[in-house]
Length: 369
Ligand SMILES: Nc1ncnc2c1ncn2[C@@H]1O[C@H](COP(=O)(O)OP(=O)(O)OP(=O)(O)O)[C@@H](O)[C@H]1O
Ligand SMILES: CC(=O)N[C@H]1[C@@H]2OC[C@@H](O2)[C@@H](O)[C@@H]1O[C@H](C)C(=O)O
Image (tube, rainbow, N blue to C red):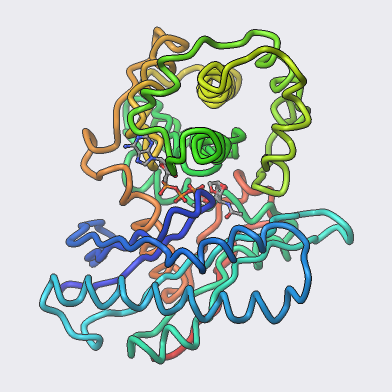
């Protein structure tokens, strides 16, 4: 019998909400529907603003959580409608929330990670049980709270006979290293994915992202700027590690730009090269036995970025996740459906080998329908 879950992801690129409906019966992963909704402009602006300290944040974060839950509910309802299902048919929604701060292990050794959300409102609006706040328990257990998708990547993409790497390029990029057979899975954030690329596009050509990477392809990589950006200590840090907009924000970029004669297109080419080269370097450093790199997240639609990855990794076959059964925009949302099921079953969602937590933990809170 089918066991339907909905996964809802709104990631660090802040482009909106991706949702999938998946049948996860018997440990399988069969995605049956996909829906997406952009954020209303005001909500997007507020979520972006909440990434940095500001006035009256508690009040604003609470209202943004309500706004986010409403968009989540719309996406969930769209999935139900498309599939001809009723709320009672769904075991649970896994709702990631919107990360606005991510400071694991800082300040008091536990630190915090904050995903704005209102899971109670989402349960009320949909009539479906909600699982939310997936990251905090891993932090409480000494972990990074991220990345959480490697377990799902293993369930979906691992091969018994060859090591496989999976690269998610969202606002931030993260890599999962899946050894052949039963070996230990590694995973970590590599650094910026699309966050700075999107920022530069919006600022200079008024577009939310660089479609296909065409603008970047028209520029020249600036070696000195690239070297300054690559000097960021995060890139050389040993895992476990995770990052976010807390570090890779527009001011970080501005502080490295200097006053050269660079054209905006050259900076765009350099930012794209930064994403490609940091991802490639992390693969070479930690997963050199992988001959296949499966790319997912919206960055998989950036053809120029994929071409740069292929050039930097000549011995690796770089493929979109679409070629391995799941379109790039659906992978993370499917992961949160899968993580919700793990929580309901009392199973661990984290991999301690990835996050550095003291052990496997069942993640999140359950909000009844
Ligand atoms: N056609 C395209 N060409 C180039 N880039 C694209 C295209 N479509 C989407 N993108 C990029 O993908 C981003 C969205 O990716 P995705 O939805 O995977 O991110 P996310 O879920 O917010 O991130 P994260 O993985 O950090 O949580 C957009 O902001 C844009 O930069
Ligand atoms: C704190 C947070 O929201 N982290 C996200 C972000 O977006 C990509 C990367 O940084 C990854 O670490 C994580 O998301 C994915 C879904 C994860 O947890 O695996």
